[in-house]
Image (cartoon, rainbow, N blue to C red; front, top):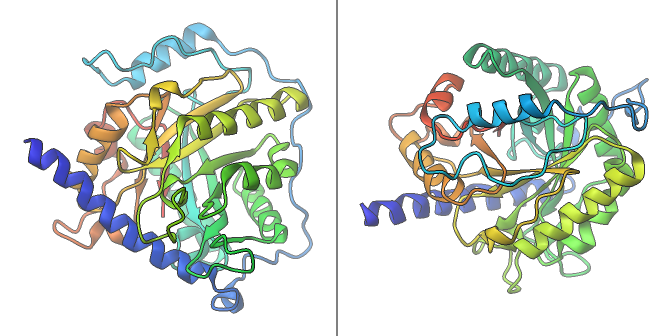
Length: 353
């Protein structure tokens, strides 16, 4: 059993690196998919800005919050869930009152995820279908649709500054905001820092993070602290990096009278996140540890059990790959009902790539 517990997550890790490094090299080409990028230009519309008046969020119902935490622990017997001594969030918090179902990708590449693979109308219609499927699988939990956009992409080319990352133009983020408004969706801006660092990349998006519907994602896989090229090995973030991000987001929330931000942290190995017990929880930020590995159902279950369930932070997420999850037998993409029944705690953030 010990051998299996090590082998299963390791296999997923290798698979995920191969997939994402390939995707990133495609996404890094400034010309390869631009002609096919119909999403980037949406005529006659402007990006949604602050849709809710400042400080107009009622306090959360603490009794309901506690009840939902217990429900989403899904009969956990380990004592890890729900996470103890976590602060109550500010008013307007999404979790655990709703489950977020997101489409992930980049507008420059059809290979990085469903968000950039399909034409806008088709993509939004597919997202709507997934939302309905999750609502049916868990009628107790309303669903909040989301678009999860890779705003900084790790690259195979070092670029002018040798940081091996490409920052997406703001006009593309504006396009995502327009599409999100059509779907009544929230937006996540995801960052792959490569040889840069989160302290340099996060502040670039402050004007968007001041918007109540915009949240943040950080990807340890491509945080190359040892100077390795992204895609050659798996990177890492420490609790100190995560605390920097939550502190930065908390300041934005407090200064602008916003509801809590959701921070998604991708993970499929132990070393991707170090010193998890030192991660600080704040009323202004809701942290999701997202199981990011791909493969057949048993492999995904192993990763969720060893690296998400057993190292509790606050909330959990689960990623589904339309293509890569079905490459090997039984060639089956987990359904919402299967995810709901298989995993403890219930993942409250679902990402489709």
